[in-house]
Length: 274
Image 1 (cartoon, helix red, strand yellow):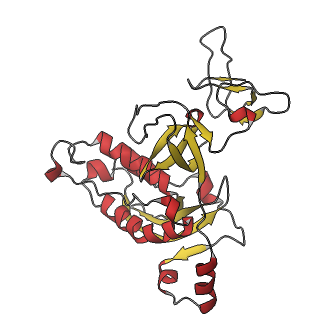
Image 2 (cartoon, one colour):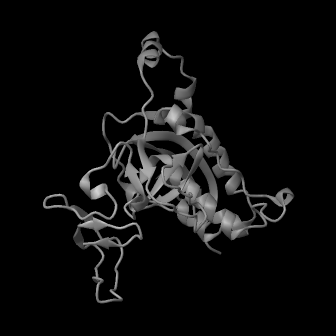
């Protein structure tokens, strides 16, 4: 019998500053072999897990019959533009904890499936989390602590911090669960930028992944961000290849994992000139 999860507790939410400011949930996972580990996961990772579960288990997801739904609902649908990142983390903390607890109570074919077990496995980043002295931490206790007059005063004069705003420059139709459709002119808030080129965005209270090549920074973009335009001297961007790629045509370049390339042009079809 393989290892399974005995218990989960979401105890905290910590700020991270790279690649941009965001919060990760601090999760204590106890395994059936007696090991007890701490992992850190941001909300978009939970969103990905949920979409995979809904896709793999349509009956338990209630897709066929809503009355037979077993998979818990993931807390979400918070309009990020009206809240600070900290506020969002505070509102979701207990709900994420409840979601995790309900998840591992599901029948074994779901609670012990590869998607769930791999999600809570320790990753390299979990072993060496950042220790920035300025990082803030939110625990259950902090939610109950009375606020000082200075804190109340600061909240009254502070303005909500917003995410980067982008505009869709071409139409994109959803091709897989967890994605978001785009139409030219649609404004979105970018919540997370993945090295894969897919960005997690929010638009009109809907969230999902979109290809970054279909977006342009609101109010204009730098030369390289103008989709399809070739970068001038000194405007190239360096990228690292995260997977090995074998060229299949004369106009393609084979890449080894870890290779560093200079991007000269980003095209809307997802192929870049390097």
